[in-house]
Image (tube, rainbow, N blue to C red; front, side):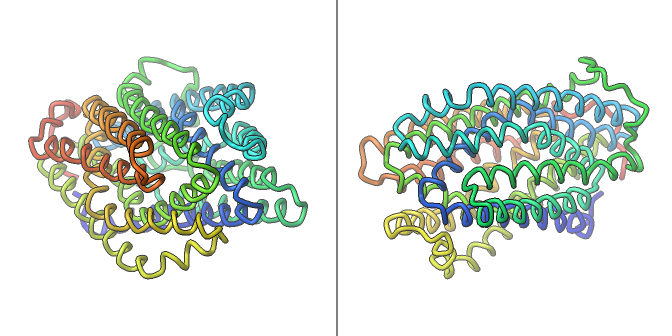
Length: 445
């Protein structure tokens, strides 16, 4: 049974990791913003493409974390080790393949999705996308290594890797942008360097893990071993792919509103990421904790833990929103935005400060917990339905038939949290997820 002290021990490094990663992302956006609104817009475009493309291999990392946690919860260290090695081999293959595809067809993707953007924006986006594609194998390995270690409650290693990679990102990026005057290419070089270094930092703790041994296991891909990973990973990947594909489509709506709206959306998204740091940290912890309970067969404790994690996220996010609210305008001014960009970003950030603590945990913490029990298909169906009916269609209607512009898109965005959160909470309360739990005898931790 995880005590509050145990949860705090896992949460703190996850929080620090998310804080540093987000803070460095914000710093990078600020550095790029000094090049002009076109550069911020270009990075925002590529980030939206990346989020979609990365789902091809990130899904395996997600599934691996859940399955390894379940194996460790049931005391089956051997299968945990086999799952780890198979996941590493699969992620390396998929990430390299995805990166190569983006390298070849990146320009066509940008032109087809963001053809209405200014040429200077598209040109900068192409450069940044190539850098992203090159970094994919490093990012893929970083994520699967992190997932394996987190499954065994080793959150400190991923925190250390995040600290190291983010320091490299800022130092190399700043050097390339401001000293060598490489512009967006400099930001891309910083990203490649950071992902490579972060991956290398995780090699030692992975090979010296006390329960998961990957030294003597085969890396030849075996569907038999990967099947439970894919059973969770594929629906999760499909969910994330459609979810982020929808966000990418919404990004094209924003493109039609002009470069100022694109820049404001990127800044608002960066602010949103800051606000949501504790929520993301709780979501990360929930995967390992709930997966362990599911593997151990502790059903009553699992149900109580879902409630606790959701409540903790609401309290933490509420606290952040209250502290952050008076200083929003000052934070946004750090991006040196034009007046029209400042106003749009400010309004959107105020909206999310109100909505995140109330609606976000039900829409994202609860499904993270349910997915870790193996209840992946239901989560995917609800997520896809809400994404396309509310966020995409709603965002389109807001742009097409109202004068709300960027604000209308984010209103639809927040309402999507509600329409997905209600059925997730109902699922958790009814305990229907229990039919997907691994067939093991209940045992205590």
